[in-house]
Image 1 (spheres, rainbow, N blue to C red):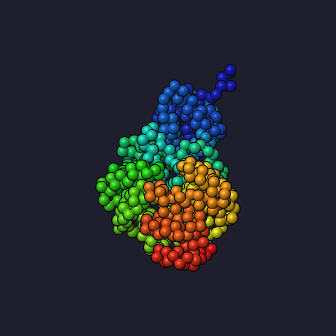
Image 2: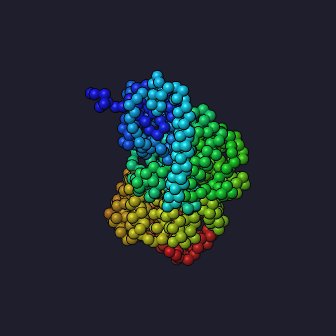
Image 3: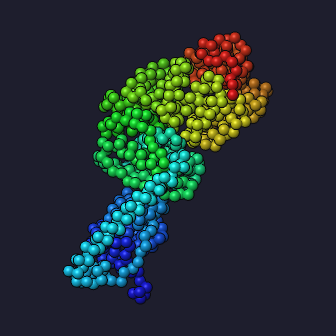
Length: 632
């Protein structure tokens, strides 16, 4: 190959010259120090200007297959050093454009230079002048370079301003799980915590719908195209990024992407001392808010205590959140231990009190600890959280749930849940709780609307989707309820709860054979004893739906006595079987035990046959539920 056909030894872009052979970068004739890996990245980009160089191509070039290295961390570090040397800005680049999830592209004009970058007679840009002449010319070149940089900076500011103003149409956003690049899986809790806090901070933008963590965490390690993720979450903008924690330092990179076009809008890297991590989260959220044309809520309206705490306290808190979100009895107990640890380290840290109260409520709902033990403890803890921070939205929601489900103080529960929604329009727990409150009061249209709002914020959460199915069932919107329940089953094909609800809807619609078939499927999937399943099949064969339930009633007393069945569930079985006396006795026990479901007695269609019974009317009055038929 002739020399003219070979790749040029020296190339030029802007005020920069690059000698590929000598591996040397010069800016306006002055050498710029650049380490080997950043230089190799630059060389790879300059060999194919205007084309995308993938991250995999860079990996193969920089790190052979037998080299063990944290590739993402190393490449991100090399790009950061290269951009620093070039004075480039990632979110509005002059030279290197990031192509999300693919690689990078060199976007400036590149031209070959036929002379050496540095010759004996002087630098290449000096055209072979003597050193005294070159020295004089260097001052001119530096002045010109300074002028060019000023123009670039002004142009960058103008483009940044235009870009910010152009993003005002963003209405919904999802923060995908930040990737832990520490090389230590035990630091996953920290990356998850940073994701949660970023979601929480962005949730303060009242005009923006921000997807809850339950739904976004399902994309951890899932490499779907961003437009597909956006469609599944029904959002127009996505935030993704990485977290690296090393000793007392933390570095977070984040980028904002217009999902439909997979278009990069903004990116930035932040590095702080761990002590400043709370301020760092707020800074990132503010930067994202600016680029979607919004602002965070003012400091006096916040979602939790913004008071700085020590890294040790915050670490205990993040570990608590990590185990809480795994949502098993054992993990929630472990979470409670970490929240208690955070409280002991800092008795004035409100979020730890609120989360510990939530742990007690959840454990009670799972039957892991008695409600009479759990709810009084939760009451004391959430009172302390609100004493420390009266405008803590999540704490108001926790208190509202306790008042609604345990204390049966419906008026105060409604006020607390409405306050939670006022303080945080993106809080799923507030909207879902308010939806349940409206159902309790017989206001079913309002109930469905609130739970639909909760689902918009957490579209893939099984508990929210299940709640929507329930509210549609209570509202007698049976076809919609059936469609929602089947959608829930698509989300989780092994959901016994979804099958029971589908059976309930079929029964309410008079589709008795379909109801029996679905109830039997739920029994089998739920691991019911073979004897119960055989009896239910025989009863259904002889007397249809009512026969199915009558055949199960002999098994109920023992299962309630040994704790395998809640009294409320027994009441449902007796009601289906047409045994009003036993249904009402079971409901009395359910109220005493504060079983889930008793607050919906005024609206639950399963108990429609009991509504004219004076004992049922008396029970509603004692609970404090409306006596009239529910309204839609």
